[in-house]
Length: 261
Ligand code: KIV
Image (cartoon, rainbow, N blue to C red; front, side, top):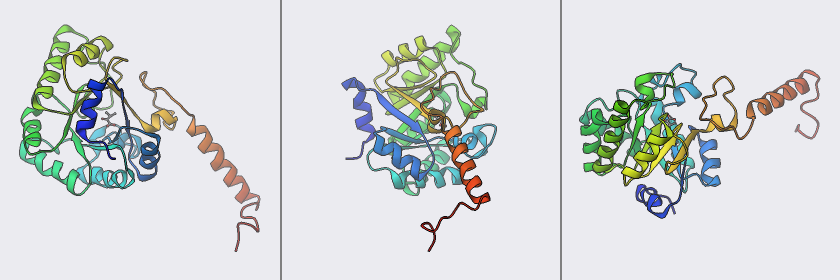
């Protein structure tokens, strides 16, 4: 049975932590889905992680749809959430048109939008028309670029983030990503809202955690934000495998008779 936004929402009441990974392609999504990840998110971080841009602003709806189709085709159990790229939700009508494309053409189950009061009308419209929405507060990459600045350190900033979270919760989002905020503030927000909170650089007291797949696998050795935990060193493994392949070809040791027709 495939997870629904309602199932994710109810995990909070059940006290079950929610696992989320940001990933962008069919094989990764198949493996992560089989491994039991709850939410497979096609993050606009694809701009930096796969396409080599400096920030997330380099991706369009067409890029995001391309990756969303690839992920959706692989997923049997988890919830597929497509990240709406910068300017794809500048007003409620544009947001609706593009969110529908993610669901109809990309086969996503839900969409994610960055921001609080600035996207109130967009979130309201999508939810009123039955489109499941995930919020995103704290550090907003579409606004702040590639700089990982912790948000909500001053009481004034913290208050805005808390009020935005309460507002998104009232509007009916099924979860909220909290990115790069102090752990204490994330814990306070998690207590204050009914929907689950999903942290990234937001400490241990959120209802779930999200990281980028390439980061936990150790494929992006040039980027290592403090909140990433590496579970593998695939960069070294991949490099060794590629070097071995090159050596075999150079020495005439590949292919062997068994590998030939
Ligand atoms: O773009 C992304 O991958 C994200 C998640 C890390 C939350 O927004």
